[in-house]
Image 1: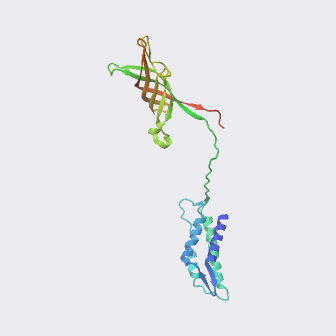
Image 2: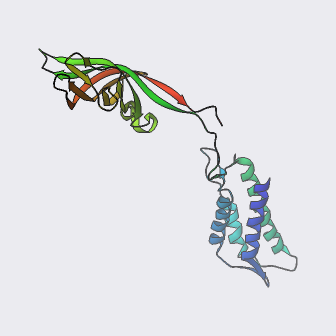
Image 3: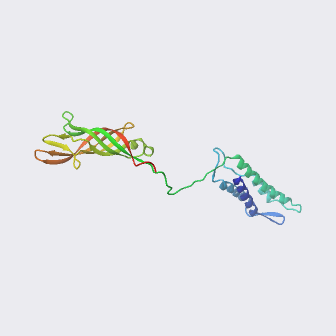
Length: 254
């Protein structure tokens, strides 16, 4: 196992660098406690790209390693080479614990790759179109109300994505469009709209059902008096109820 071999080699190299034999004893470049902590750092950093199974404690070398380090400071070497056996025992214990840790935990390699400007599939986009029926206030009060009504069609622009903005803003949108007929066309009066000769509107919409929207806004009108040939432009409020359709734009996926 590659991770086991890497950890074992790194830990043993670190020990041999920090513990050197001089005469009849071993000289420590750092204290046993510092060496023990550094060994655990080697272990944790070597496994930083691996995910430990949930509920499992972070792997550390046992207290046996720390005790063997402390005992090694008191060892006196002799002609029989017994001190070499103590050092070898420490190195073997390091290898055994690395093997045990590698086998006891489920480590999964984790690699994060960021790819900049990667070409993705181009998909067709949709245009939201509202088709509905609305009423436009003309004059009077509740007892003597005058209004116009006609079907309309418009383009819808959402104010937010329901996934990120919540239900209210995700269901709210703005729209603009035209009524499909003039509101009044008599011998003395024509009520239509400027420029395109049809009433135009802008509204705030709220989705009440999956495809059904309630709309409220303002309508831009143009009135022409056929007797005096006078024209006037004015704005009136309107309310309407519409259905939303998605019109797919573009050709096939590329």
